[in-house]
Image (tube, rainbow, N blue to C red):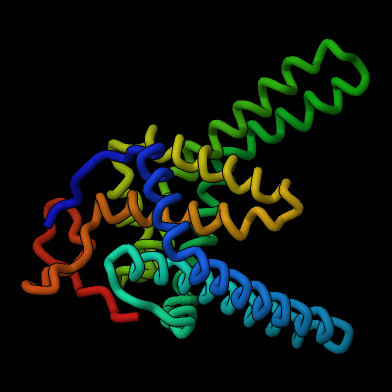
Length: 258
């Protein structure tokens, strides 16, 4: 099964809105439980920091793994709802074994984005400092800021489906990055627009006293899931054909049940 279809951000967002509103209580419950557990883990790490730097480092790593597990669990929930399966809160920890690899892949992806964006960010900071002394530098500062945002969307688009690939497929960190790049190859413009729209949507949710994220996050995840499933169909229950087959590949291991 080869990946097929185009990235249509607006269509995906419309479907994400429909999917999120249909299962909003499940998404909201998942977000609240994840937020409480993550806050508790971070609080424990902060308390241990006063006793020992080593304990604080270990607690911080444990908190990062927990947050990653919960994030993958939220994606897994969205995938199961999209595929027509039920899912309880236990799905939040269904991807616990994938958390270390996901953390490594996420760090590599972030480093790749930073490598592309940092020069433009440096120019933005430099021109902004000069603009404090002379307004003549303001247009250059604004232009550099816009360039940094565009580069971030373009570079981030390469890893648009990283969490979905890890949650849905049996892939290590390097393999997940490779598959993610394959999914967005030839679709980078659509992926960049997707990143920009989702970022703007969640920024609006954050501006609404943060409570808006309880709606914008589910819409974003459901929209990404819709777009991902257009490129990587769910396994066929009758034939057992696994999801995630890339162009030129005959098969991959089936996604784990969650």
